[in-house]
Image 1: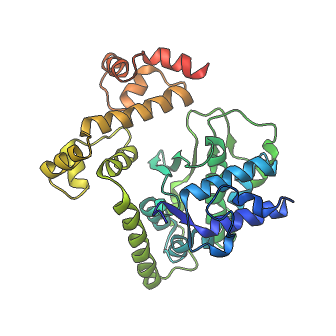
Image 2 (image 1 turned 30 degrees about the vertical axis):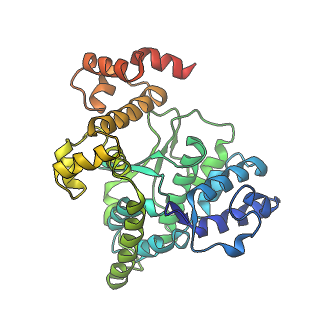
Length: 333
């Protein structure tokens, strides 16, 4: 199996959800490696491609407009396998967040999350859900975070705020039931936030000795994922996490534990240069801002590391053959 995989518990919970909604669970396995053999042959992890196909199948047959919210409701700490067990042994919520940011890609290797603190609040932004659509990904991610935190705190619900970068849906009442009333739609960026003071909350199941054991296994799983990646893929993943604070090539090499000379040579062997990869990530971030936000060009330029809008405009024309303004109009048509 590809090392790009997720816990098999996600599949089991998805099948249970679909079954309770009246659909035939076996239909979820169509066009996956389990279509003939069934889930009896499933191990502890399932490939990312199989999981995405199952999610696609579920969306097509369930008729559930908020399948993501309902799936997220089922994702408690035990669903997240060894990382979920590690969460439960943490001393505080702050340590949980720290562990999540270090190891979340063992839950979904295609997931990208930004975390930052501002004005005494903590923010989690799912940049790439790895799922079928941004909406499905946001619903699942937000619902899963809320449910996981509530379970870790013995049923205590935290005051979380949720922002969505799309208009309020007709079925917003279900959003309120699952996530609470602190919802904002048509936001610039999809994210959840909470009071920074909550980071000091202690967990009732804290166990430092077990945490060390669980984290060791998390490190092994993450190393397996990274070992399958090319150097270019590792670089892209690193740059995506550092939006607006892109490192220079020498700094990137150091972060990837190699000399600048070795780093440049190994990238060349893969037919890439650092500048190519940096431009790729910058373009991804720019396209997100052009499509998902109404930020002015000057703000977008600053967010992706340009000192002024004119340099940003020239770079964008070089990358795409059109101006950022033209791209924003075309992408929204």
